[in-house]
Image (cartoon, rainbow, N blue to C red; front, top):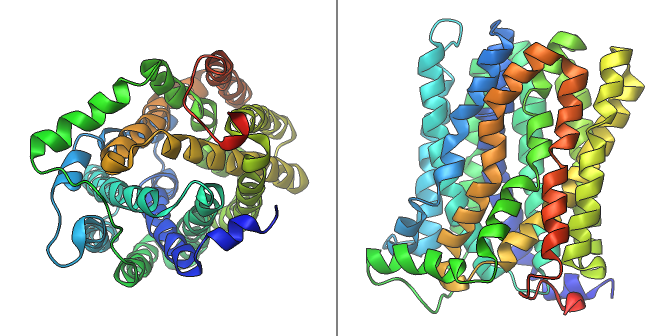
Length: 413
């Protein structure tokens, strides 16, 4: 029981999935939390920092151009690998360009470059998500997603944790150039991989556009499932959209402290949570995993309220970080597996892009509201609101339990 998943997952695929996870995770912080730290250091208000979340809008609209990436393929590297390589090269260029813009002097120019980088990153995600949806089987899906999440979270540590330490000593310009160079690891993974065999490739653009959405929306309660996807991680998205300003301005942590304490400890906890989630997903079944992990990640938000009262307390800070990231890692594994189970392999790029776009709605569009809320009501009410926003998703999950007839995992049939 403990070894069957490892035996079913070919080792080369494990390594490639890890590298692609790293490549997918690296740009996210550089257009999100790390970029927010850069603007925070430049003295921008909470409202402005909340609005900065809109830089990542491409992640919520990527399903619009995903059919193009399902329809057209590159002659040398195939449909999946060709798009991965193209977007990775463009990311190297756009991240390098961001390095040479100072937000204090040209805030709009840097934000526009961030939007462009987010577009390339979202496009890379379309290709990478479709690739792993095609190559991972049902038996190795949970642990395969754990490997992907490991690479993804390691990249977030590098661009959000180690990157902040470098920025504290060397400046953000040097740090962004280093991050652009690290995107070459994604290029390496793409070149080493093999194009997955797919039984169906859309012959026309119309065939690529219409059937993926039509097939999905014909499933029972499809619209309710889509709403659930938006709400499942909404509480997390709200509570942690302004965590950077909270750490810098309320707890008075330096960039080096944030990179060392928050990001490093957070990564270790997330990786632990990811592997716990991967192991227990098969034992619990998908519904129970989503429910238990969802409750835990919602409750974890409340621990940050204690920090608003205690001030700068390293033990309490580490405890809150460990609990939040541990439960978030567990919830992410179950959630990713849920999304991948919903996809038809014939239209994996478009369908997964649609589902993951919906899951990013909260992260992107809750930010502006979070900025206004935190400035008006304070940090304690802010984190409590994050907890309250986790409840609708759990209610929808409970409501869907008896009504959704799609097979989640074998143990729930």
